[in-house]
Image (tube, rainbow, N blue to C red; front, side, top):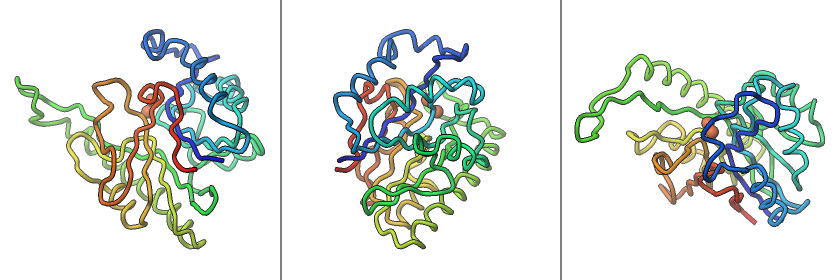
Length: 247
Ligand SMILES: [Fe+2]
Ligand SMILES: [Fe+2]
């Protein structure tokens, strides 16, 4: 029995929005690679948290085959929201949970448990630019309107995360794992509202995804920082092998 995590499946069994980059390299036939890895690693007793960017589908009917692919994997499946999950309105998470009752669990504004651990999650947000570089490639500025917009989203997501953390704490959970789709910090930050909240609630781990490709994998915190373990679990980073979070 174990808890696993991976993010960014970016499925597109129906959608026409297939990303050109998904035809090559680590992305080539990634659905099949991931399915085979799960079949080898994950049993019906295990739990798999999918950390956002599940599908390119623009709405739920364009995600049917993608959701079916996820449902066909072994074990319990918990999903969190990614920036590309257009099928998932944060305010309608309850309806999704009713729709997929007994098959998939959608983590947003609520929390789930694994053994004595509370699993808390939200999309998160971090300012990703545009950054302005000098000739040496150093950041000398950024788009201030974009930063202002990102700041509002960060505040909203931080409020959502706090609500879930408080619910878990009110129910007496001491052990907490936080799942964010976005990295907890951007390339300019050492810490953020999310890392500070993880410390405030004494989370054991922060698991995040969203960063794709060699040039982005190391944008945020990896390893232990202030006693909390941070892990990137985007599918291409993990080469489609889910990470074991805890036994
Ligand atoms: Fe992604
Ligand atoms: Fe993403």
